[in-house]
Length: 138
Image 1 (cartoon, rainbow, N blue to C red):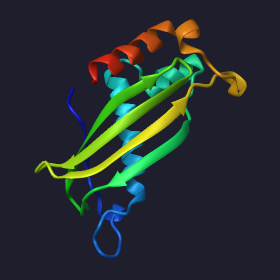
Image 2 (image 1 turned 90 degrees about the vertical axis):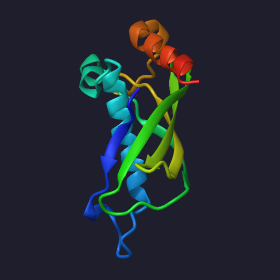
Image 3 (image 1 turned 135 degrees about the vertical axis):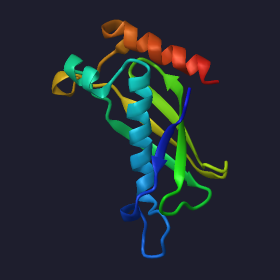
């Protein structure tokens, strides 16, 4: 699958002209939303179903810097899906192939009133998609 592409904006850089570290977390979110949408699970669709997937954990490794106007590709991989929790891995690199960042995010699935959702039972199509992605992303 084609990676998500993000062009570094001027406002995302600090006084030294380097991308502020907090932006990589935002790009993870952008790429996750795009990734799910490309597989038929738009965020709006999930919310209409009453399902949200809040972040429960994030890990980051910064490898190289980016600056204004760099194009960063973000690859997303499902590494775990239990039906209650999901873990994603992100790999970011510049257009020239320089790795800039790796990270993971963990999510749970909640329904109305913050109730835990068990995807396998309540939303088997979504569960099968995520498990299938986990198998193909290896």
